[in-house]
Length: 357
Image 1 (cartoon, helix red, strand yellow):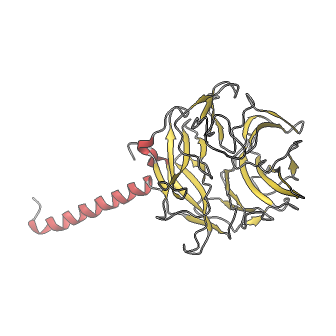
Image 2 (tube, rainbow, N blue to C red):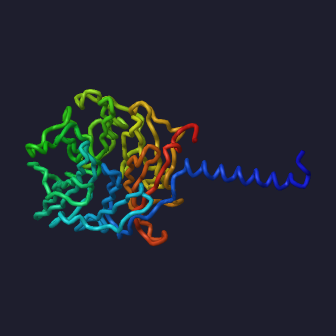
Image 3 (tube, rainbow, N blue to C red):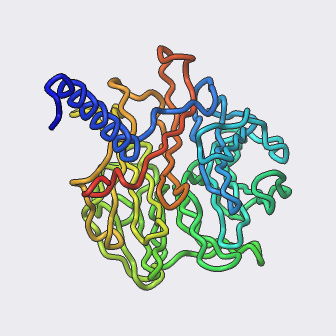
């Protein structure tokens, strides 16, 4: 029999044990606090993110957008918990930069894309370029320019390329969606030739391609909304497409799509203010059936500063390991501690499951 004098002590012990267990569970199912990757100034910061074949995370961004002269790279070797001081990618020269994207190919090679602003008289256009790395982003190849006869001021991309097969990549530029063949250094139309716009394109393990296109064919520049599709889906390599009618409002910075090792697809979306274009929060949602439906009941908000997010943010997500997702974004609010910056949030995949264990 427990003595009456020990009952309060035992009750306190059980309460503390319960609180500790609850805290441990919360840590396993809650996004981390935003970690500053680097400080920036303003403009088109537009970060890109990838996981290298050796497990390192690479973040590339423009410190001073709107024509910055260099792209900065920061690396994390511990799953995004700490980041190196950013350094310029040395092969990019003589370019007023609009940031692009990072892609890790099946071979482990990394492709970094961006576009260069060009001006001649009244004409303005952008030229897409890329370089590659075979050593997880330590060194980079000379720059290659993607050849087009009719560059426009909208020839730029912000999402990873879609690797169809070795050396054949789908490039979702704003003004066209094309296949670039690296062996012949040539460009051909993708699928049925429609323009998806500057949106994510991903392919599942079964070969289904999901497009983040908000419209059935993207106008350039963006005009009055029409032919709304809220996402597209193809099971025949892009020859025909079916409207998903289930992706959220696209907005200026759009959203991100990624296929996970499990086969699930994760959507990184932006929550907007009612009746206004301000971005207020970022949210992760899973699809367990290749984009046909989304598990919105278990969506997780990963960043909500309680005020509009300054600068559009452009959140990008990758899978860090079997248990964790990582999302990179920027926020230019000058009143936050240490001012404008690029940030990273780790989210346990358990946070997106119904059992939350």
